[in-house]
Length: 56
Image (tube, one colour):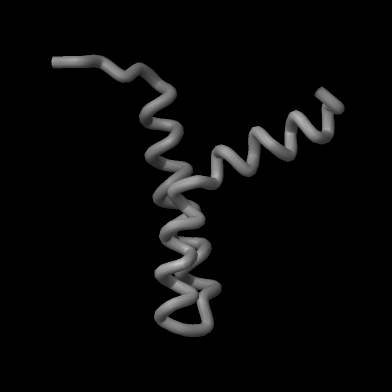
């Protein structure tokens, strides 16, 4: 059995929260589908904006 550590749990809960947020704010079915895909990649946008803010 492979242990992922706390990072996997944090990502999972972040993913679930993002899915709920994006789907609740979707106006149509396809906006909900797009929200699901946005939820998959939200950490990439978070890190990008953080590095942009830190001017790295």
